[in-house]
Image: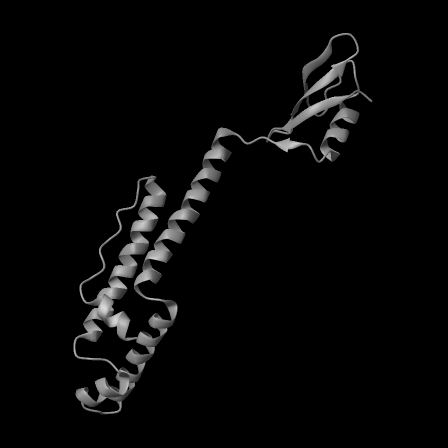
Length: 170
């Protein structure tokens, strides 16, 4: 078996490496499946390299670009999520949603608006703020998707006025 080093496998299956040629020393070599023109057993060499943990897969420029885009998308999604949660934690979001459910149930059951607000912990104007917050979250997510798709830096929308006060109460 001939000595080899630095094997790198391309997506098309060929493996670039260096082989220790008996007369020339270490020389570049490409092992291609089915190659019978070389003066060595390429099938045996390929089998050894494919079993070698040192074999490094080589990405095409397209694969590398796709990997970089996927990594960037993860970073942008994490940043978008962190910005949303900085305004309203998941617990706060659930509490506001529950307050909306209690308010709606009270109204459906015929309670006066003031009583429904009191039962839910909401104040006059909170429902409008909650709708503004939901619209802001949707705008954040849309901006995240736009930045991922275009490769541009995101331009995050501003938090609507009054939303911080609403989330602080819940």
